[in-house]
Image (tube, rainbow, N blue to C red; front, side, top):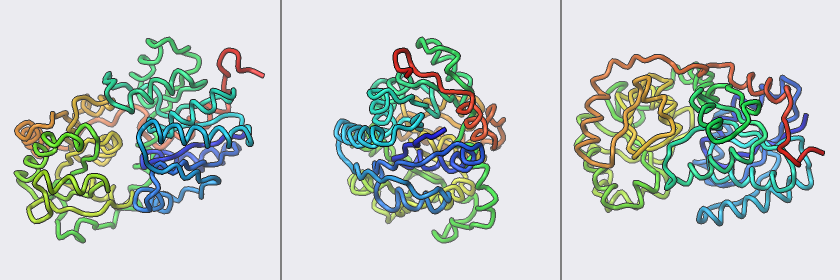
Length: 363
């Protein structure tokens, strides 16, 4: 079986880390196409080295742009690649623009799409990722879900249950497989911080950063935090923070983005995390650090259900209340079902069971 795996951004890289060796062990020929959606070395190259991911066979150089430009450019380049290679299936991961582009390009030329992390829903159509998830799932021949609730979502949307495979959370497997590698990493010391003595913050979503009033509220909450705050800054966010009142001269310490292993160590050693990232909600759940998610909603509702996470609006008082709850929590919760080290092997088993083409696409 020959498949092409599409990656384009940080969450994709993390998820294919454990996947590629599992596919090879199962006798599946899998090659990587990197769209270049995240093309900066700090947002791309470091993850390939940290996670020991095979070098991509193709780098498409899509770069930045609006959602339409980025998706359209990736779609055109992937269509050309797929037309030349004609793999047995295209595997797309998560919900970034590259995921949607791959699904569209493959479906248009009759190549079955396999969606890893299918069925997650926030119910918020203002989120570009929600649009990507919905469309990708409708175009997919095989849907690999991270939680049982995702199966129910897909069935409710008319997806044939025979196409759905509950494999578990590949992000969780990546965390578990790398915990030993970060055991001796004392990353926080490089920032003058002690284990358990700081809050880790990551804010980058447009729903927060593109609204100055929301970013000011988030900044006010971080500035008022009872512990020092370490804030690795997404490249597009840094110039906005000064306007919001964070310039690095306060208890909020700004840093450049860090690699996957260092970020995992920082999450493990933090007293709490304030974020708007989907992936970090899951990683925090796995490393045992309580999380406050600054969003209207989350597709990772299971992290709230088990007690690892709590939602907060972009309001300084509400974020402060959530952070206080997180800092006071006992940091003990049950790991979600199938968030283990066997996810990638379940993916391989599902692929070997056969990908059923969509109606009209069978040769």
